[in-house]
Image (cartoon, rainbow, N blue to C red; front, top):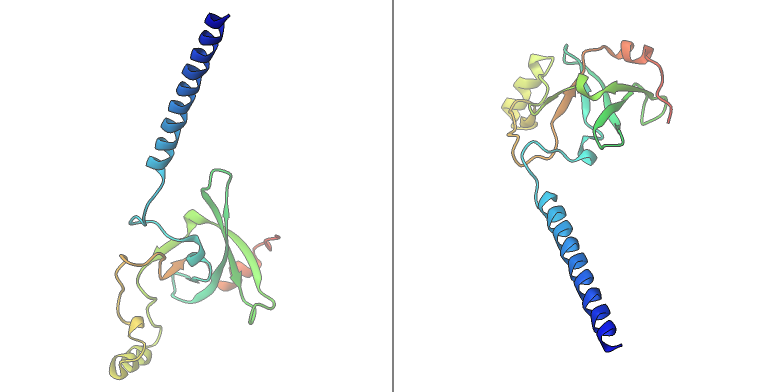
Length: 159
């Protein structure tokens, strides 16, 4: 009887040790895949919401209101808010994420007087200077090739 009890205890100890080793290996793999700090080229999703969107003619056409992900976590669409005033009457449209171009440079001014004023007064120098990408967790603005009227004519995105 003592032999059976000793064999059972030895088997339990061996199985428990193997399970513990597997758990430690799984935890080490998860720790290796986890990011400990921000890496270059990564953006915070929370900082993308609110970014202004311009067209190729450098006209503001809206801003980013939401980001839609698929089940794997890949960004599928970006919801743009077009028109409206203080959030009222805004038209929401979904555009494919890969259709947006991102810029770390501030948009060019449409009038020469704005840039001259900024340079002489020293105010709003961000409109005439470029910023460096490092240290920022989000781009300055996005560019989408459409006019505000074209976006308003697109189907409304429903939440």
